[in-house]
Image (tube, rainbow, N blue to C red; front, side, top):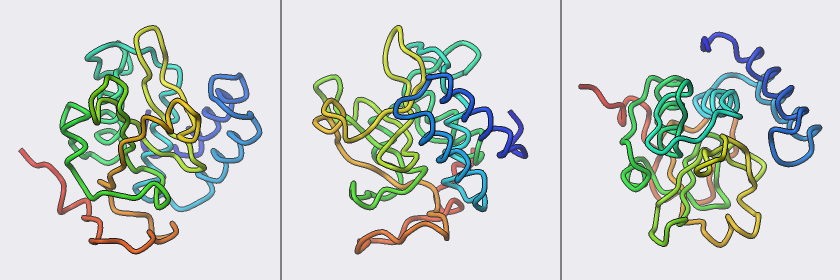
Length: 191
């Protein structure tokens, strides 16, 4: 999907949520998509819009393409590449060592969120989209979807978060940051 169509993506996502493909109320999902489309397009917003456009794509272990299916790290890797032209490592555990650590109460749209789902730290990754929710590719038989970090299952398995992209200027500042987040140029992979 071309990057020059954030409004079209937001409308598409709103239709998906209204059809029941996301979690939470369809009205809230539509409000979030409208809010994202109305605001200036920062790195976090681009990541959110692109990740939401992939809702419904089937899960495939080792998958890196929406055409054939995505696993959790394949989804994150694909979104960062397509939305920002930014190459991330392939595995969730490797991704957990990129960027800057972020406290759960300081999350911003586009941050990576990590979970312990296989009895080992950082075994699952998703993209935070705001309002305590994230997009991820769940598991075999599932499809890319939105879930709440605050749900009992995800809250107990939360391992941490990382900020890889530059925070959006309009976003709220992080509570007492320990180090400035790297700019996209500082963390960009170049072969």
